[in-house]
Image (tube, rainbow over all chains, first blue to last red; front, side, top):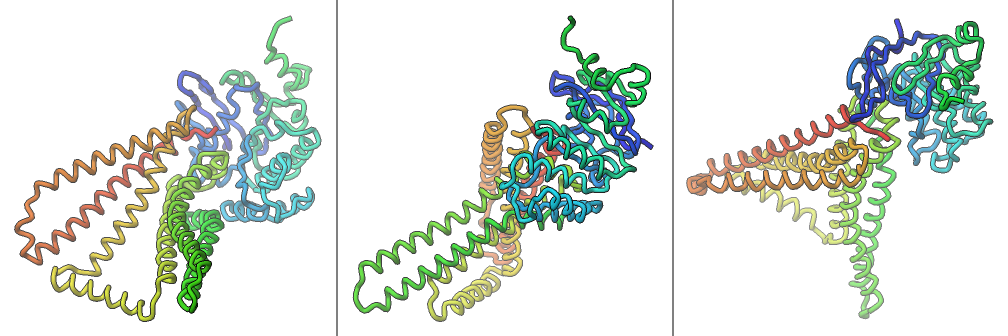
Length: 234
Length: 269
């Protein structure tokens, strides 16, 4: 059974159509790149999967069920914004996740924080932007979830942090789970992806495995992306 | 899950409310001590009078500030925790919107009641005279016995009705802020301004309903009630329950509006 499924999923913001009759199925055990330019509907799709938005039409299912408290227990979500509680210390953030998520692995989180030299007594307010992003990622990846939804995990960070984030994702995710990574920085994530979904103006322009793209088209995902989303003709 | 949400809500608010209570208690003690010193000083000291007056002023300000602070904290907690970036964390917890709302409502009401209690205790510290506690106890006992014997009222039931009404009013007070904030934040632009507009719109509708209710009761003939104690008692209990039901109905409407906006029209930026 697919862990994430969309059937005729449509989302309008007033007169603007953000997602237009999306049909999609993601199986467990795959790392999927949700790729597209800004405004293509990536964040909307992820928000719908988390129940933060309601579909205008169609449905989105997590493990066969519409987004609800039960599905949130098996989804680990990294929002594109820092959603940490600023007055809390790192330890209190861990307590918070441990309280609410049965699949949270505290030891793994503490180990990663120690590796980065983030003291448990440091408050979020005292952390730099990069440290907050790492902290948030550590919390999300320390869960043994069935579906990881990572919205722009490497956007707006320096290359060293980018490497750390990608390393953390591939070394900590549950191998039986599906990982969806939304980004427009294709070259950085290409090597860790099994499948790619190209989103363009709310529609799926391509859904294929990375191997298939390389074999049949003889080009990298990054090169194909540039071709599909070319902004002008020579 | 509600218990866990309340635990974290307490943790977030106690770090601000408890120091405030300590300040109020300390001011009460200092005011009381300076009053003693002033009374016991043989010579009339101008400086002591000024210090005592200043402490008394600060004490009164702290009492008023504590009530305002509890209300502001209730509003800010709701807005910041659910409508800003923290909303991404809160709305993706494995709980429903009812849990998020009730945890905030319960904790806010507990702090309101706590603030009233702390303020009363602080006043008690400042004005306490020997035998005062016994006097208050006897006064309350007399009041209830007179209510029971003269008006045939059940004093305990009346007290419970009063408490229920106060708690309901506090819940409705919270929802009077939650509903407009939720509606205002469902729009893409001018969220803050629209929240304020909807706040006043809800207040306006509420006032109209209150006035309409007041006028509809003005025609009720009460002549037969004044001389009949049992009729008077049933009138008082009936009025109390009418107010409770009215508050519950207003609360239910505001709660539904808030829930609907958060469930169907959540619009985190």
